[in-house]
Image: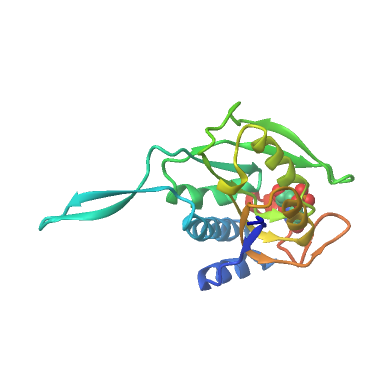
Length: 216
Ligand code: U5P
């Protein structure tokens, strides 16, 4: 079977609501942060559906033993927030994945060339090949940042088929690059917007996610 990039836009009223709040230019930073946190929570909930490893066991209810499914604590789960903006999605993701290890990756785009450069890399030298990885970055625009993140992860043993990207707005240039190099990868996004302008901003998008989260 040929693998292909899967992109899910969950049709959920909470996701639509918080996306609308985040898009609104009148939303102040405190509410913008809340909206991104909520989007992180609900998109992670969706992404975990067929991704979090479980194990079948038996538990004793007060009345009788019964079959049960638990999260498998043996399989490593990692969240990789792409700094700065990915930190906004991390809080919501972390509430659902309390046992996950968090590996920060700091990437900054050069405003002229739009090329990313890495200023912080807390990734381990090697990931266990079973590791479930969830990457958080609210905006996939030209795709430079997410491609740099995927290159760092895969060279450390991360399996694209076990990786989920959680974002808020994804744009075609980024999705095309991911699709060409990482078929088997799955993206969860609140929406897909059609245009990236010549300054690298998604239109309509929601502006600079990092600036709006941190108010700077
Ligand atoms: N970015 C935004 N808003 C946009 C486009 C990009 O905040 O409309 C930021 C995001 O923080 C993201 C990075 O981490 O730029 C992705 O851009 P790119 O490397 O995909 O072009």
